[in-house]
Image 1 (tube, each protein chain N blue to C red):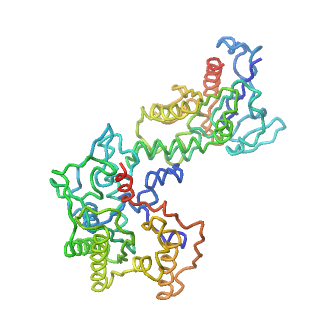
Image 2: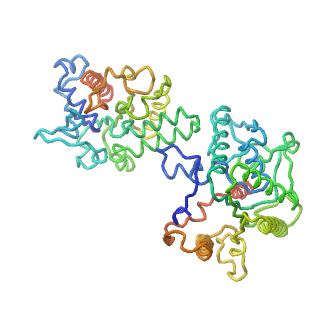
Image 3: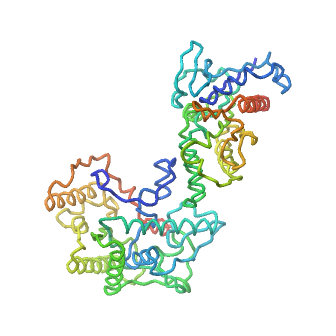
Length: 236
Length: 295
């Protein structure tokens, strides 16, 4: 039995729910034999609804990225660690600033790139994995998938009319290069999630509710869930 | 000064997600605008001319190994720029930020650092350091050395100050002289003689302006660090860089002078050793010369 651990952030809660709503034959259709592959979420009671995490006992709370590393789990029990989000692209304030700075023309490409790298290194998931990466003790493979950019956010970006069709390529090239140097796999976001402006999640795939305007809808969650399954298939 | 609660202006700020280490590497949070060090009064006037529109902005760039370098800020980007357009846009950002500093500051602190300078033979524009050291390729037919004399240094500083006052009539100036001796000299004199000549001229210029203009003051950091009383204890082992103790001593004196003249101008906190920058933090392009000289 190959064991896969999915770690991440609040967006992983959306995917967790999407996993459960996928048709039973999805795994088979995508070539995953669920009798030989066990998928476990770091937060095994993680669901994301109405802007709050809901646990099995009915309690709700906000997810904090910095809590990701507080879960003590033996990563060596797994063949594959799949990080979905965990601060990768999903910090809304940082992402807004990235886009605004990219558009401003005030910064060099190198400084914009460096600020993205600093953001990656400051992410909860990299902080969690870095001890193992530094000591090279992990026997598992790691693949990172950034969580959807929580965009068209209320305050700043809704006023941006710029079209940045190359922006995601620019950012994901930085991610791919960063992870490649550390022997970590990288799976870019499915492009169909991104709106025409090139930097925001298409509103068709977001919840767009008053309580939650950040996370994916069930439709968007299903796209990411399939993307994750395909990534698992190619990574194992 | 920031630790003491002074509002050190910074009009060219780093991308917000950039780490402290990266900011330092990209020369953010070091200069009020990312001009790099301005060592000469002619260079100060050049930046003032560009930012206030007294002269047109330059278009010169250097290209080397598929990267573009700014001749007027050769060290601000660790590895140059991707494109010419990016360089020019970034240079304009700095020039605009320099203007913002002039417009919005109450005090402008300028340290006179060098008399030796390098100019373009074609345009007459000044480079902050010899081409070919941090970036660019030295060409004897295109790059001209000048060891500036008293009159020119005085005129440039006086003109730059008056230009700044045209746009900000309340702006006051504090002049200091760099206590750091020359590492090398392009003049045909011994570096000791060249250093003394340079410091003497700069000190005389500072004195002349601060004596004659009521909104220009002088603070004697140069004298404090170099005073024989202290037997060179404020210098690093290389006898060139000023050590953290020296920086703290100078700044404590600066704040004491303010307090004695203006009273307890603000609730001050003592600078502890952890907050004092090491000499490694104080960037100086001449250190590039040291590296260059070893090649």
